[in-house]
Length: 136
Image 1 (cartoon, rainbow, N blue to C red):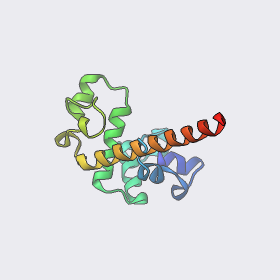
Image 2 (image 1 turned 30 degrees about the vertical axis):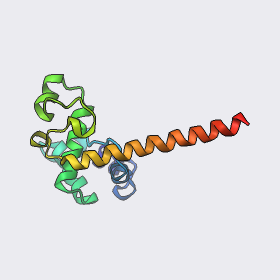
Image 3 (image 1 turned 180 degrees about the vertical axis):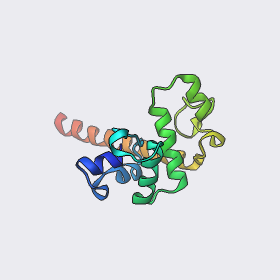
């Protein structure tokens, strides 16, 4: 998401769902949009992080997790992702985290993975309940 662009074009910072999505564990990232129109420095992505950090009170760990998400989502070649995230970056959750590269504590990624498993279980249970209801 590009908070600066969203705010200028259609969505006030405080109505932007970024913080909610991030808190719920969605794999979100920050990006730029129309840097020549919206940004005032030579580092538009840094502006996005700065604004997001101020508006949504992101900690340094939050920012590192969001940056890690950005690299994972990016179209960077394998060798660059490995350089920035560590050699096991393709493994899921905490297994793929190298804190020396990402500055994201392993316990945070373990928590995210546990939450995701809980979501999958809730979906499975709901599908099973509906399926059983239709079988009668």
